[in-house]
Image 1: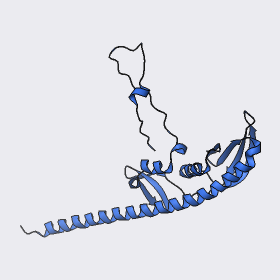
Image 2: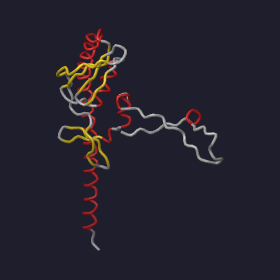
Image 3: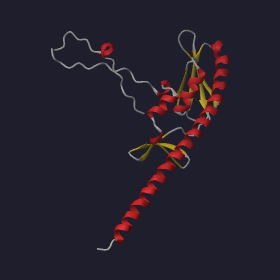
Image 4: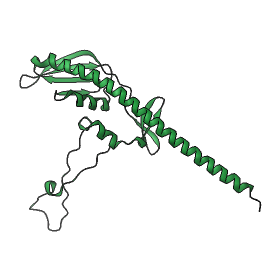
Length: 195
């Protein structure tokens, strides 16, 4: 995924009193957002439909006309088991859970949008919840509820995206076929021309 830096000359310009006169000063870069911080709608703006295709029931990104990264794989996450508890600062603990499969980045984003402010982190097929022990049960219930909602939303969004990609690919294939037929007809017409 590509993020374009956004510049603000006044806010981010380099102020250096030791700089040579006439030297070029480059503005500081704003930090780029991680995937988990990018809203789902922004993901689709950065990855337009034209850059997606389907092969063997899986969605792939296209790069230079070739299959690249898989996108929005089939995902139905559930907590498979409890892993460990680690004590952290300020009476908080980190509760580790193993998931049924690694978390897809788009699924994670949808989940985070639904979940809200509960501090949670995903690392492959692991989920880490950080909270005070007295909030564990309430937070875990909210996490399970958000997982159920996210699984349903993700499946629905993926199904709609697959339908759009199939329609786009069919339209492209149809246009390509019409162009090939036109080229063949023109070549045949030219071949039949008597000198």
